[in-house]
Length: 436
Ligand SMILES: NC(=O)c1ccc[n+]([C@@H]2O[C@H](COP(=O)([O-])OP(=O)(O)OC[C@H]3O[C@@H](n4cnc5c(N)ncnc54)[C@H](O)[C@@H]3O)[C@@H](O)[C@H]2O)c1
Image (cartoon, rainbow, N blue to C red):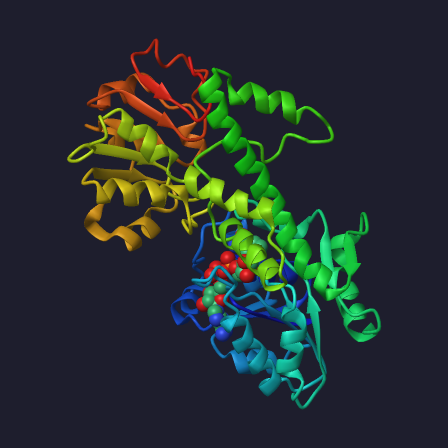
């Protein structure tokens, strides 16, 4: 099939390369010239495991191309995917201006009957809004809601082997339904993964999934605080609770608060949508409140060790990405920590295996960036682990102690809690764990 993906970011690039991998002719379009130039030169603008090889194979074999000419890309395709950003507006709702711009471009440039597929995360009601925008097109434009569930860090595997493919299409729109069924058939060969529904339910399903996951995290973060008050250990509680098959073990990890480009904005957007319909989603509101408080937990823990004053202290931060295996720092808990440290006059030195360039772009020379984790720790009065990258999981603690000016470890991911660090001379604090 001839497919155009508008928006070549974390979702658009993976989707484009994934659709090309199963034999389609895909053109990825974006208004960001530098990004498209880089892709044409064989450079991948984001870090995503497995993506480089996928893009290279499909460009070399002629199924995947890149352009800044969005109009021309739309004109030649039977399926146009919208994968642009839907960031949070100041009032908490989703900013749909990029989606509207693409819909208007499709209305103007479609040269045949085609399907416009909403892959961006968009609030319920966006499908009919986009239909109104394309109603004046010279050819019929069918509008389908097909939210994306891939996870950064595992995006390629998630895209090619999804748990489910949610497709929201009007029951009487056989043209769109057949196009989507044909498109996704290769990803559903071993089992039928397509979950058909109406567009409003599809739009809502995406938000409910993310808010449900965010809720589990916020709940466990509150329980971690309770564990600290009562002398329990959230590691054991998580294990015990998650062993119940009705609950399951995933997304029960206490930590520095969820971040990334999806959970914070999606929780907020769902609350906003409900309010527009006269409904207060108390659980989602609380999820967000708990998370905002939790984002300050690392700084609060750290400051306590310096009698509330970190001015002039050299603090090392391991991990800036919002989670491992991505270079995405959007809404990362590390940013909240670094911002607080800088505003209180600390010296900040960070290390991240993949996100250093983004940290540099955000902070300039306000922070130091080390090329090696031990170099970051050199002379530091505390080391805060924010992102559980693999190389941080079992470091040489003797070397670390020798490098650090003061052996204080704040472990935002509870991965060092059982390593006997106090016996090695460290002060150790995790999130709701006792530590040894
Ligand atoms: N990142 C994720 O893990 C993830 C997962 C599932 C769903 N989503 C959703 O997918 C959408 C995209 O997210 P992302 O992380 O890929 O965003 P992103 O910021 O990485 O990419 C968006 C791209 O769209 C481009 N763009 C903006 N306006 C454009 C226009 N008018 N024409 C062409 N290109 C335009 C931007 O230049 C950018 O390259 C969002 O709605 C997000 O919530 C993201």
